[in-house]
Image (cartoon, rainbow, N blue to C red):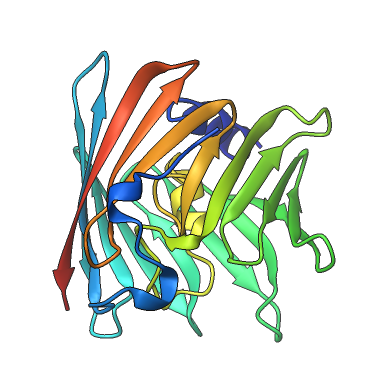
Length: 226
């Protein structure tokens, strides 16, 4: 259970927003959709930056994620995340015949998953993870509604908008970055406001996180053609 609750503290580290209108490109006008996220640099207002790098297979699925000095490997089944692991952590995802998530095993400890189709929520022990219609994590909270709540701009593409994976939010939830890496551009992370910048092709290139007007961190994104 500790593994599933611990991430709430992690996402708070990067937890109303406005987009940089100088590059206000509509969703339908975005060009070059074959570019995929190559790297992200998390620059903290107080602290050393963290580099995140991405590698893909021939199906354009994320297979290797480098977070600082940590290397995560990801495998898939039918387009869904199957395993997510490094030398210290191992997550295994089990699905039923309808590809509905039924269990997550973290470092050998199995937790049943209760899915509510109407609420689009996954309950794991005391934590409820809710996703929105764009398959991005909208909230993760315990029974006392303590946790994190993320807002998005449904008209703007996020850093992983063209990932073929059907549930990539689990990968980024468990590394503590569901608002940084999403299908749509995030605008709020709890009470933290996020100001986004896009290039002329509509790609998210920078996200600035501020809490009560005070800079917390800045994310710089780069992309590559696969």
